[in-house]
Length: 262
Image 1 (cartoon, one colour):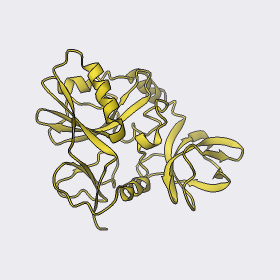
Image 2 (image 1 turned 60 degrees about the vertical axis):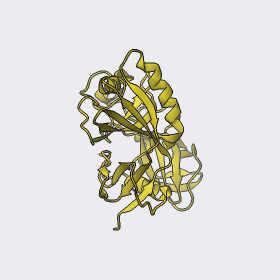
Image 3 (image 1 turned 180 degrees about the horizontal axis):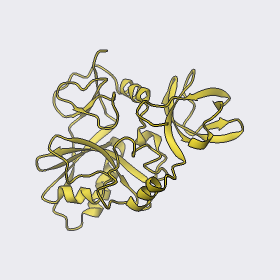
Image 4 (image 1 turned 180 degrees about the vertical axis):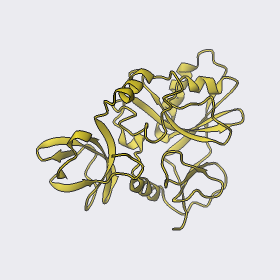
């Protein structure tokens, strides 16, 4: 299959630099930032104190700081929140206008492998890149691999990162110690109290609207999130997936990703 490249205008960058850049982010984010090497790419999030998902992000190690790949329409909100946390930390937090690119299904030259799941391809920040595909093509590939897009799929301030599969996509380092929302997140993982997960659905025709109810008989089994013709992401109850599922009277099928244990 030919490697494809798209510019992701739905993503934007924040640069965090200065002597305290890594420890500052390490104490906030779900990912280990202290050991992030220059050029290395990791996936993580900033949570609310009660452990709900606020911002999904990628972290890219730089020589004198960390680059954050975030949702473009959430960048200003994250800049504001990081500035609020900064206090006396010796860091500079600023927008970075370099573009974000994705390649798939392979990691193109000059790209870094997406750390979330095999088959997603790679990401690149800045430079002159010939992007012949549309972002919608990338989103279709992401859905085919079965990986959620938390910005599009997670109801604001309501979703726990484990429900968005962060624990299975290397988005949480449970060995690193404290981070914002750590207590709730670690307790959910330790106790195995995971009732809901984001999973891809397959069906015929156009995607149901965001929030459409997934039914198992007459019982609610979840809700549809983002999608396109033939495929959508849904937040589903794991105890109600046996049997025939429908949305608005149409049959739908859970398509378990290869990377997710059933």
